[in-house]
Image 1 (cartoon, one colour):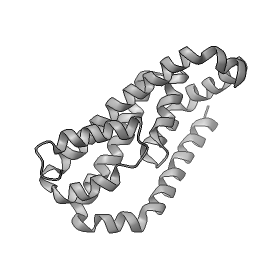
Image 2 (cartoon, rainbow, N blue to C red):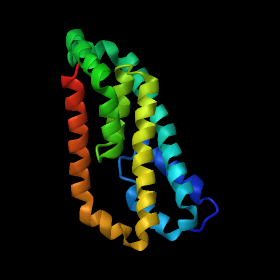
Image 3 (cartoon, one colour):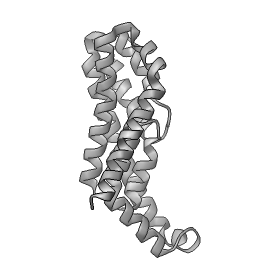
Image 4 (cartoon, rainbow, N blue to C red):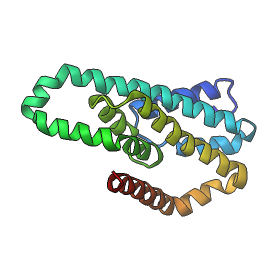
Length: 182
């Protein structure tokens, strides 16, 4: 696949699938591929981001339409309309940061897609959060490969948890600031 003429389309498809139905981090494939094909580094990041964005559009509407089909049994057996309205209000107030955080952390993106669709969260804000967070994630990987080359995998393995904790704390701080400033 590394030197295939279908490499970019395969990455786009893999990104679409990873964002919709296969919750396995694509980074394990992307970093070695970016290292091997440095001349296509930015194209790989672009195609991966676009595949994820397309998958996220699909996932949002799955959540939206699936909820519409199952709304009555969900309201009868799982939650009450009041609880759902409260949940929807929380999503309305803090949904951007929720969606954004799932895009940059190891939390499966499918969670944010379904929740955003189910709550009819603003599609435009959803798309901005997805595009921004996944661009940071994939272009950040490309930047690491650009700067550190074959050492990138070692750096990621060595500092993975520190980066996850740091990003999570930053997102929590932003959300907390957002909540308390209202």
